[in-house]
Image (cartoon, helix red, strand yellow):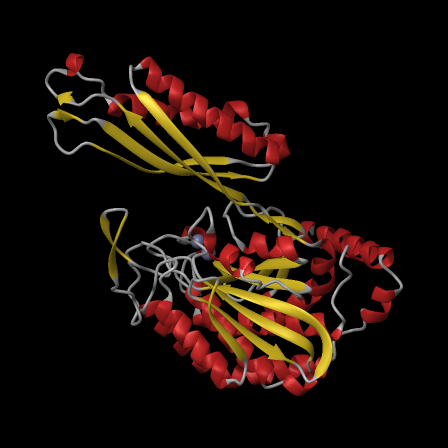
Length: 446
Ligand SMILES: [Zn+2]
Ligand SMILES: [Zn+2]
């Protein structure tokens, strides 16, 4: 009942937007030709096994951000075989752009997939489980597609094949962005690709992300969908000494422990949470070598997530003040670096109202829903959506045999994606792209 009411209000909002930009839009908002949707379905079904095979291959050979050479080569070879114009090493990183020029004139739409994996040791027992290992931040670790970017890449390779087969019916251009290093803030791979001109002439951009939830369902929302993600680092410098004689040393471990505790008060005491949720997390802390030596220094790193620009500033200021003053109280010194990373991803209202019906059509009985709240995850899709109207949506991929009430989320070594959801993502991207082009895009300033 609740969902139904919210859908009605959403539909009303969509109608208002459509009215506000009439008459050009009204003429364009004709229903999507069911024959085109049927052809997308048929072409996707025909390559579903290939998409699954790509996904397994990429999953088994994960590459960290900026190192996606094998994945990029696989993608580029596929796009070239489809007859697309292919650019490699876009932005001086392993970025790939495939351009599909339709047989008829029209706008340009971009579809984006990210390709990088994470320094996580896979614990899911799959036939295509990753056994790749690396050294990250000085620590030996596995490498795993724990954020599902293997699925993003495979699905978009599928969408490219589906749309390449429909070239004669495409009015406009489709650009396929295969982006490295989404997981590497503060810069991320999107920035380098945009600086290299990726978004030049693009009239609208779509992206999707997989996550936990009933496999094959889609969700979306207008406005903010992912949080601003900033990075921080604190180095607490004390004075090294014997662990048995702490009075002769300045202990950075004790000072750091207090800093970690005090950081928890920023969100609870200093942020106006009515302006949006916020998070401060300590992700790693390192100091010392053995039991009887007080180390010289401790470093810690973490992330800040916000939606409100004022909260973003308040947190950065408080983090600096808390760390430096606590360190000072212990006779130590804290160096604090806060690096602004990805901004919040803002979904364009007109894009969501115009193309969310396509998601409902694609999800069918599985369902496509409007989300009540954004994700605290960060995403450098936000950079693409800064340059042209953007629409980023979610695809749920939890396999049916996994308990949804006890499911491992993204970045967990137990994260799992259901192959059966792959064709849904492929169809979703093909549908929104084609519907965007057929309807002539959306006005520049909704
Ligand atoms: Zn991630
Ligand atoms: Zn991700």
